[in-house]
Length: 287
Image 1 (tube, rainbow, N blue to C red):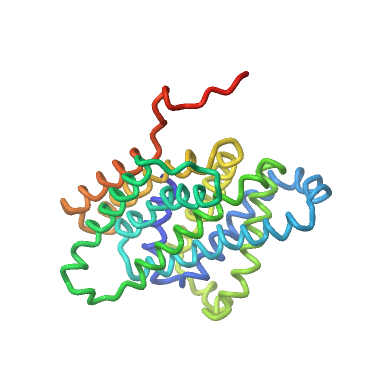
Image 2: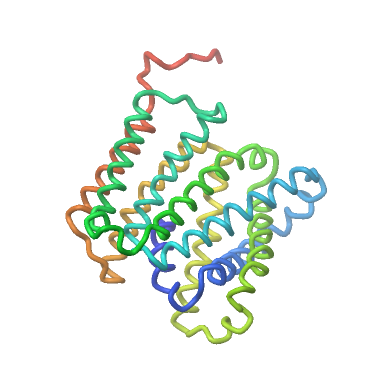
């Protein structure tokens, strides 16, 4: 739900705050929210952290918290909040497919059917643009899809490190790595000159995005520590519903019948792809 609310908030402010600058501010605030709680554990974690794991966590932090959000923010400059959330809702299915490719998930008929139903839902959400002959280009949609793919890959790869180290230091370190990366990347947007000129309203929205990021991503990584990536990412099905409703209420974005049907199709696809196997088909493990 915080992801859906964050998409709407980002859509509201992205016209004033460029994508990379917004991502940098988002995770700077998120990092400082987590730091007081992570600091007591950070010294112990750094003492036992392997150099190879440190590099891997740096790369995952840049991917999960910098590249993903930068792509999403760029897409939101060209795509409505509800439509972006619908595309982003492919995240769990991409996670399933990547997990299967890495040997961590089994692909069955229900999964394939769920993929097809969810893709049909996304296609339906894009129907008005299809009818208009691609007039606006597809860069925004592709950027949102790429951000979902990056998030899916990071979710699959995070689990071994989250099982090895405490969640809070991992969350804080990943955000710090992304902030340093984004501070350099956003120089092209001239963020040192832009930040002082941001309006009070935009700062309030950025503050909401930053605090919700700290809360949301800590619980996200905590969940990945204790559950499989598939069971965690399936809850992103709440993302398009939240974004569609808030987009209609706060941004006056249309909530047509085709969008409601698309939401239903994606929800059905996620249910088909992630429902438990029948009891008779499950393997029984002793103990």
